[in-house]
Length: 62
Image (cartoon, helix red, strand yellow):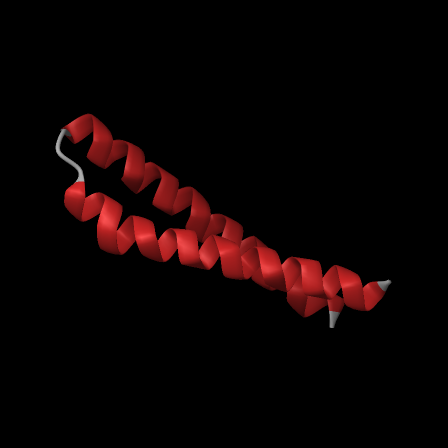
């Protein structure tokens, strides 16, 4: 089951990374209001932390 755990972590990191890319490269650029820009910026920071956390977990599982 350890391999499945590593796969799950890597799969989730991929999904989070793709989402982070879309936020930074599309959603922030298309945001109209300051409130919306703040929302996307905050979400991007959270996703960056999530990606970093997943990287650590993956390293520990290998």
